[in-house]
Image (cartoon, rainbow, N blue to C red; front, side):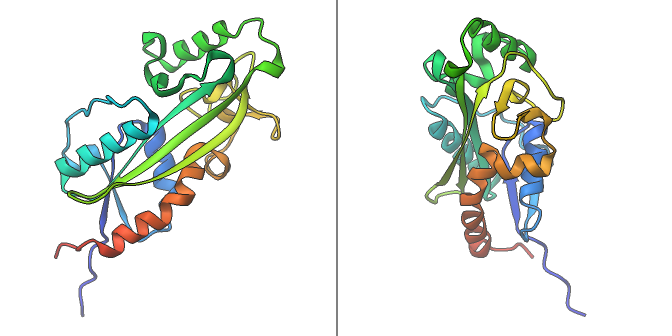
Length: 209
């Protein structure tokens, strides 16, 4: 009986439990073994020194592909609020030097105190970068439009999800079940373009014996 070849590995370059859960679900129907940084034994914390979300995604993808020797999917994402001059943007994960999601959400809400609904437009932006050692990095971008609510609501998301309101759905992002969120979110939209890139890399990857 012929032994079945192992599935090719794809390193998911994040320690964010929410992102790991979402990307694992989005990649579930591809013939790939998703590997986390912990499972790959990679403990290096790559510094995000880029001036844009795209630059940070590429920096992480290239660095972790080099460290692991594996095809690597990395992303960077951010919340852009028009009334705040597109802040927090690339600084979303460290906005105001706050340490927790709740503190960052509270800061955004405080900065928008008194701002009328018609001026509370915002968007989530995500760039996925896929890298292999010594090869050109491939990228895909997704955007999800909405507005900043007046208070946090929902417990199913993470990051700024509780204060991000989707008018057409009459719900906050943090109120959406995972499957629905992956269909409409910035990460889900970025993955629509990234799936073919992932498959291309997997097809070209050499499966270890």
